[in-house]
Image 1 (cartoon, rainbow, N blue to C red):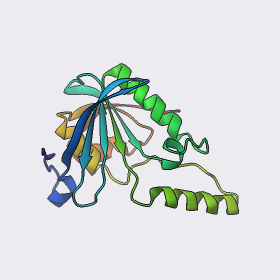
Image 2: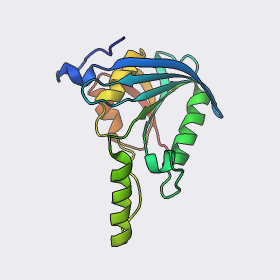
Image 3: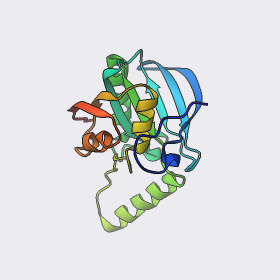
Image 4: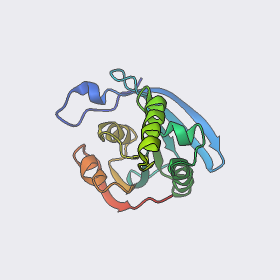
Length: 177
């Protein structure tokens, strides 16, 4: 199994991602090479949807955080499923990479409990699509040989965060559903 190299002076375990599986994945948006990683420390299993042969410099990259309520249950309570659909379509068209970061264990139950609290308080039902950190996406991008990217993201902190992990963002395109 291939390991993504550590680049930051943090514990090597953070970056010790194993390539767990690689397969061809046909979708309504095109065919992807799907690469599944496993973090042996956290148990997380992020995915890389690779369309075509992304260029080493200037590859289009989208980081999508799993939303089990929208992605699996197809709820329209948030726009996460629409963002994923659009992200896959744009990635396929650009010949880039969509990184799909899995929810933490209990993610579905935690999200449903949060919605229940929001219902009771009359609060907003918006989801957060911001990854908790950018170490894992950066490690995957480096493993794929992509250290100079065009990032499709609405998170203004993403450019700086990826740069701190030796992935240069040459341009950031705002993402909408």
